[in-house]
Image (cartoon, rainbow, N blue to C red):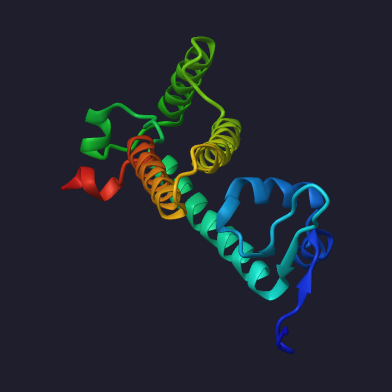
Length: 191
């Protein structure tokens, strides 16, 4: 029996509570997979059922976490700004004329255009979305394959869960290492 505080709902109810579309909710369910606190997972002929307060809190935590990560990425990207001035001028802190500033901006613009022409600049938002979608699909496929193989070969549930857990750990370590390579800690380089 449900407590008076526990309110259950369908995917449509959850989408409404989150203020999003069911299409977006489907993407989130695919992205977070087994992490999502479901009372009943949807399958053919069986609808999803959610503990609405717990699931809304889960997705709010994910949104907050993503906002923190985005702020960290923005801060790291701000560190990558190319200087407009030559190093000797910066070191001496000489005031520079408007003409020198204009020339420095023009050189920066030319460098950027050349980098774009050579394909060395990547639209980060597009790349982030592509990687996020690819990793979410990969995650779903890997974990589904583990469950399928466990069932096909009649592996004990603890063995299947352990395999799933170890693969999940390896995936998290891979993502952590990838982040460290793509967005190095600015404090670490100063040491």
